[in-house]
Length: 187
Image (cartoon, rainbow, N blue to C red; front, side, top):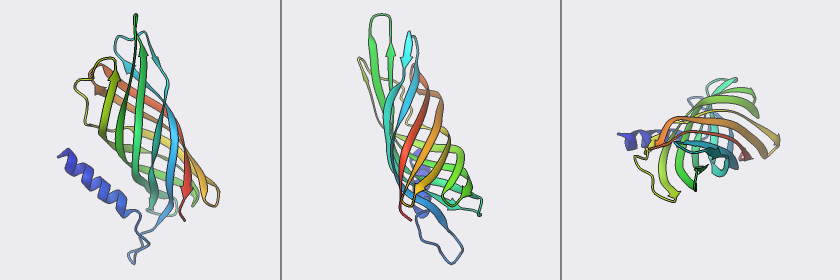
């Protein structure tokens, strides 16, 4: 069921790249995004959880519902790394996902807006050293708050905060990140 839901959301996000149809469908801010984020994840029984840099890249667009509102969607490869100190050791790991955002965007102009909403993140891989992860969630739903704007005709910035409440795996939970992506716009 989860794979069917992921496929439906992927098809929906791909449809956002269609050109303006006779039904009045339009889109704005189509872009390739590449950037990084500083991620912190809670690991049970650690003495400290460190902030670690991960990467994100993908494509995005806004499916316009009106002049002022749209649905921001796309497809991203996202990393959620983590590092924690324990009394006698250090642990490092990383989760990677394919993500499809479905976020409501308030458009200030055709080239700028603020957004909030969930993404569907399907796990690609996980790793930790030393040891292994157990009960890894195959899908998580991060909540993202952000702003995207163009500062040149074909370049812009997407700045965001995201949070994943709950478990990512046994003893690993509550991932939070602040990130910045470069937008290379295609319009």
